[in-house]
Length: 333
Image (cartoon, rainbow, N blue to C red; front, side):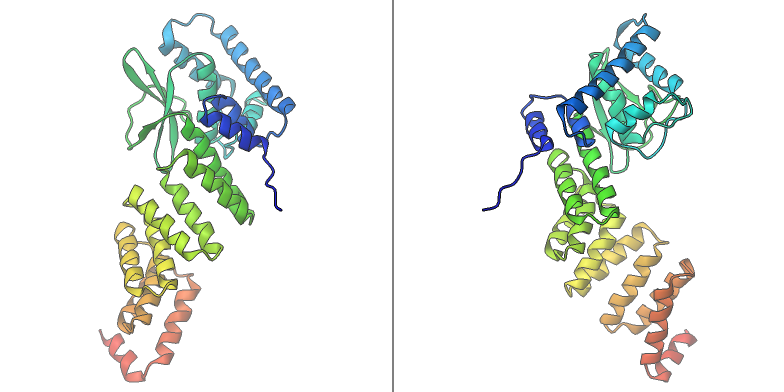
């Protein structure tokens, strides 16, 4: 009989969903902390940051001023903030590093740090998120204030991109999605799949998580599962170029040539310089016996990306495989 071990992460996430634990603890556990002692040590590190902030900014009139002072404090203590770190524990360590030039984190990590500190200060916080970015949203005085943690002068700034307001739970989804990307890049497909499942559990409208999970399922030869995930990604984000492109690959593998052609057409319409989409569309057209169309797509792919060796090889094979009158006719056009 197989028994599945229940991890601290499993327990913590169940407790979080039941409202029995905090975003702070959940983000620390997602960071890879595996013991109560380790978690307590990071709670104390956050205590230190909070206490130092309160000593540095003792006079704060209302939530707006508290939120603005916290934003300024973090930037003044670590003015070079942006790097690729997204896990809260790592971001805390970076924030506390004695090197003033030490960078801290990316949008997920910086927003997580600001948010957990803001919750400790009793600020009413949520997040704004889209497929590529996440930032903090402060509610106070019957207003909603955007807090862009990756920009020094972007407290209470005017949004120029479209975002969806969400609960702080999306911070967990963002951390899992980023962790899944790291695991995938390391070749840990099963680990990446688990993290993308978690991402979707805590962020069911997270289009990039469906796209990313589709990639893993494809690599695991689950073509039907990959197709479903790409379908969902496109439903959530109708202009999702990468999802159209990858769905085209799956449909081609499933011998749905017409469907693959439609998806590559859509990818190219959304991104006219998408060399790989032209290359793959050329393959589909070849399979549909549209040899002129295939040659045109290979040529366009090579024009856009001269080092695309596969396109050059397929073009040569295509020309070599046809009677000479045919390819001479093509070149006369």
